[in-house]
Image (cartoon, rainbow, N blue to C red; front, side, top):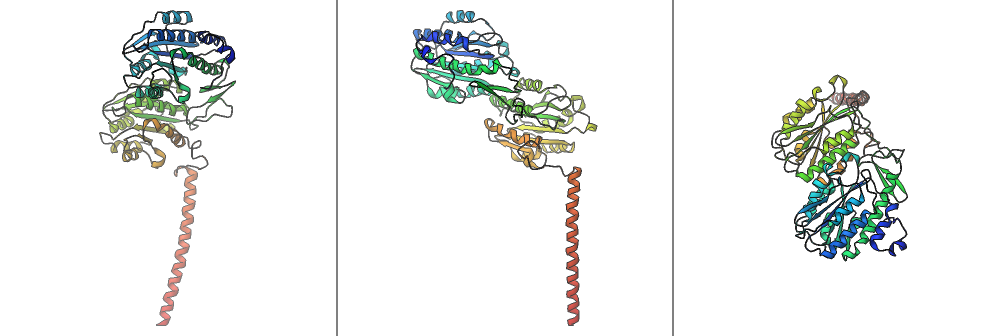
Length: 499
């Protein structure tokens, strides 16, 4: 791992390892951060090794800027079961954390690492346990320390945790399985996977981990003004924008769709074929769409409908007036499971979602109405009637398919031309590439087709241009016909003279 150490390396090497970790503290202000340690206390961890790990934790704590508005720390231990040592909300003082760690008694059973990651994702990083809400964008970091091979599956649950924004460091000691460590950790793996020969050497990870936190500090120590995300880079920082949006000339703000007045309803497939972990990816994808929209009561209004064997309005067009409110509501949506009644969802959208009662603006205002259907499979009911009805009602329809989605159905749902209104990804993990396509369609003046003017044939200028081209072609055709007629007459005269 590459990182900036806070004190000269030579001085660090001359100190006992616990003192080394303490010395980095005053120079590294690591907040805000939600940090959870996931500690293996299975029977394979011998008593003196567990004691070394205990000292490692306390030494690392002394190098953190701990506090309610800085770094919040939680600790869980696991074997065949999972036990919360203390949650993120429990302590704001380092001394109280150290006392709880000193009182820690190992569980000394099996090694259910997947179960521990599941607990960390669903419980330890919940707002109820003290994690800050997602809209605050406080980094969530899990450090998993283990000495053996997991007795359960870790790859899928770790992928779910990473999809929810949890950054995972996997630290293996002695007998740890490298393949499992790599399956758990966040990319890039060379910065998130550590394998040390013994518990005595675990302090090496502590030093490098703290160096990473030192690098994080700059964004929290200056008024960076980044609209979306600030990233520290050594002694400087830069601003980032969500995928599909570009950084503006000021280096801080992100561009948005300038076609501001839109009523957008998203129909999201919540059928059982999607699966819970993929549904979380779908929610992230929806929020990435929201990121490039100018959400406001006067600009873009967003509504969300989930469908399976039934249809549920998660929130209507008129409920939320900012992108942050919409994104928070999306993250709170609960997965429905069961069947895939896409036709029923289209009917609900046409009859209810674009009504003024649910926040759509009156037709007299000519605000574009846009529907986006997200599905991963074949509909169990007929879609043709309500897909056609939606377009008859003037709703511009987009269809996004993943995995086993049926192309013919996507094309039937979508408006013409299909190449602008149908998108497809082979799996949920690769669907983020669709964002630029959607952006280019919803905001054509900013998208991938920049430089190529996309105009409706019904627009006045386009209609005049079309009429001009058509009249020109008719004139040319008339001239050609006149010339042909003259030649025929000439031939007829020649034949008559020969007789």
